[in-house]
Amino acid sequence: MSKRKREEEEKDEIEEELEGEEENKNRNSRNNKDYRVDSQPNYKTKFILEGHLHAVSCVKFSPNGKMLASGSADKTIRVWATDTGELLFSLSGHKKGISDCAWSRDSRYLCSASDDFTVRLWSIESQKIVRTFRGHVNTVFCVDFNPQSSLIASGSFDETVRIWHVRNGECLKTLPAHSDPVTAVHFNRDGTLIVTSGFDGLFRIWDTATGQCLKTLVDEEDQPISFAKFSPNSKYILSGSLSGALRLWDFSTTPPRCMKTFTGHKNSKFCLIADFLVNHKEQYIVCGSEDGQIIFWDLQTKNIVQKLSAHSDSVLCVNCHPTKCLIASAGSDLDTKIRIWEHE
Picture 1 (spheres, rainbow, N blue to C red):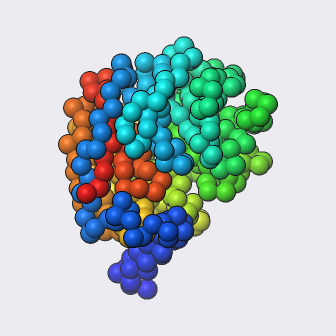
Picture 2 (cartoon, one colour):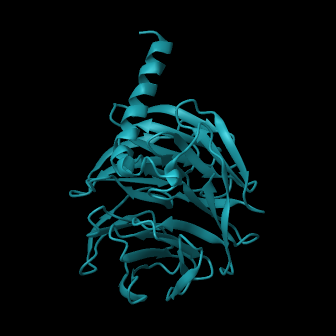
């Protein structure tokens, strides 16, 4: 098979598979202008959210799309209304800065990871701590709910990943995940797998039920892995490294195969969080950059299709709305504002 033909087949395969999940999500909204994306992205500022006092390490839209949660080094989580940009409430309780947060599937709970070595579970209704998960012996850097919201996975600078039972707070498993700090944990779409990444230059795929490591992937440039997550359909993994490259992997092969590499942003110091912007018409990879920009890549061609001058310093995190053409971004201490961007 020729190289060109193989690339064309891979393009069709990725396009079809990534589109599958989003087709169901958007089927009922195709005639709504809020969901239409033209041939090129054209995002403009919709809201600027102010209130955090230090760097904002994470921004996450709720699964129902109504709220945006932001976690900061100022030790607080703030919850904002997506439609108005209004601050709904703040959550305080961590003794040190917050590194990550995640929503339960029903948007009723948040979990947060902190430099104080704990994971905390918050009720959106009561705005109070429901449970504190203790066991890590260093900074907890990343956290995720499984799709059933019955488990929480947390990754730490103590080089372990812990799997917690949400209802009783029990630590069900401790995985000796990496030989350096863990930088990401993410469940696949049915919760049977977890992908983790670390500063040791590896990312690994784990069986949730048994805690067994199923596959280990090595970044070809042997750089610390700063980020990893499953694609929306869980067929692929997107990873980022401090080499300044994002890579899309097919992990069904042995060994796993890097299918696409996205370059053009600056990333050598921070763990920048990227996301998939996938809907019924267009497919992009979106990531911040240490020069204050947000970069959009066409998923198929790998071309940069939009650059936003977003923040006055490093853009640490971006997150895409689950149904609408909205993106949230946030950055470091020199620019603590959160921006919500809307496609025009």
